[in-house]
Length: 343
Ligand SMILES: Nc1ncnc2c1ncn2[C@@H]1O[C@H](COP(=O)(O)OP(=O)(O)OP(=O)(O)O)[C@@H](O)[C@H]1O
Ligand SMILES: O=P(O)(O)OC[C@H]1O[C@](O)(CO)[C@@H](O)[C@@H]1O
Ligand SMILES: [Mg+2]
Image (cartoon, rainbow, N blue to C red):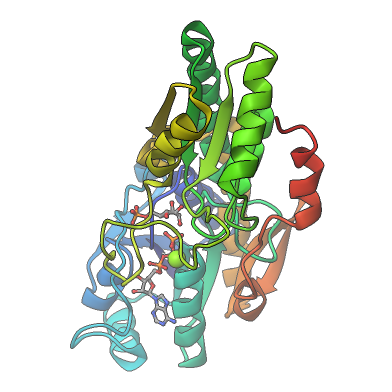
């Protein structure tokens, strides 16, 4: 009977707990597997900090946001106890046969390295940004889009009352999926994404045309959006624990520029981590539960070095290599499809 250690790594995401629940329920019922949870991402694995996970521990978890295991950006090769040899010794000491790592592209890169160094490891992809290759949707994305859409709906009523231009900044470091989907759902008059620079002149033309027909302009901008003359996304908050620029603030830059150029009073709202918190949507609960269940089959089949993924409506298996291809950007055709409605 295999014992599996589960961990959640990188930024959190609605649906992580549903994955854990799906894995524990199917793994124990169908495969006779046992489970422990490593705390705070790779740190728990490296330090052997594990808690038992059984049926009673995962009760009611499908609807709970965040991760009961905690998460961090600690690396598996970090510190005196890090590295594949030490980790294997820790797994042996704890009686854990295989590792399930739930995370984004960084977690998959770390998992691939551990797999190549001999660790029995499989993965589950997560990110609200929906920018991982080789999976059609990641859980957490639908929840983030729903939250951003509600924000747009609310901003539109106050914007209409005051005849103001409202700017909403959403997450999306490399890819503008959250902006594109929420902006489409909320009927935004301009959607600005990292993949497609737009000039201030063009944005103001859209804003003025909306105003000229008596409407209050609504602009949705992804945190990673760049004007044509910017090399890097806007960042003034230093680096995160993994030396990546902390993004956020482009909306606050854009709003006064629009106001200055158009004369229309403009307000910016940064949605921030509200997009990542709280209960997952039904879609994300279903997807996360199915991925959690399917990853126990990967372990039973000893398909180390693979992760589960959504292909169409089916749960597929892909190698860590495939999942680490280029991020899944918004294709130009998808952007142009919506761009005809701007203004
Ligand atoms: N190539 C790598 N080799 C070893 N460890 C890595 C590698 N890439 C990332 N890691 C480790 O894995 C952790 C998780 O990666 P990261 O912080 O990028 O989160 P993620 O899983 O991509 O999720 P998010 O979507 O929040 O970025 C990193 O903080 C780092 O410690
Ligand atoms: O929570 P943190 O570490 O500030 O990370 C924020 C980043 O995480 C994401 O939500 C998901 O990768 C990005 O959109 C955002 O830039
Ligand atoms: Mg990452």
